[in-house]
Length: 158
Image (cartoon, rainbow, N blue to C red; front, side):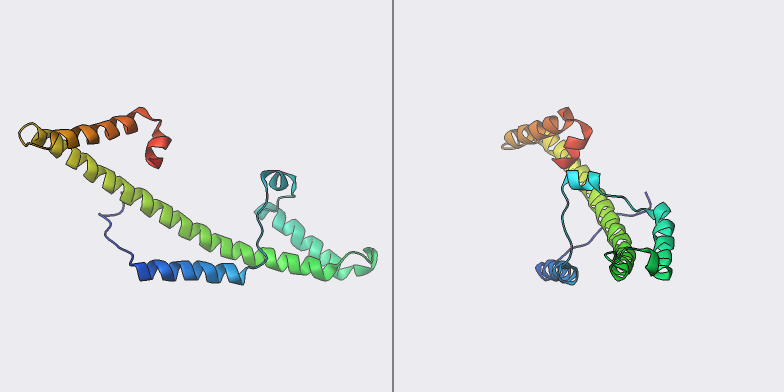
C-alpha cells in the first residue's frame, strides 16, 4: 500500500463546515433531480463518445435555424449543452473526492479491524488467567464468528 497509518480527526465544527459546504453546493444546483430506475433506463445516454455528435448537432442547429421547425428552441439546446458540459466538470471533481473518501474509509476501516483483531487475541489470551475477561472474550469471539460466517461484502458492511 502506498500510505502509512492514517491519523486524522474531524471536529464537530469541521463536520458542520463540511455539511454547510454540501448545502452550498445543493443551493447552487437548485435544478438537480432524482430519476427512478425506469426513468434512467428510458433516457438517451450522452457519454464522451456522443459529445462530439451533440456538439456538431448544436453547431448545425445554430447555423441552419431555418431548416428546423419554429417550435425547436436552439437557445434551449445551447443552454442544455453548456449545462451538461459544466456539470460534467463538477461531476469529475465530485467523483474524485468520493473516490478519495471511499479509499480512506476503506483503509482506516482496515486499520481499525486489524487493531480489533489484535485486541481480541490479547483478550482471549488474558481471559485464561484474568478474572472477568472470559465473558468479554466470548462476546468478541461471537462477533468475530458472525463476521467470518458472512459473505465478504456483508462483512465489510458490518
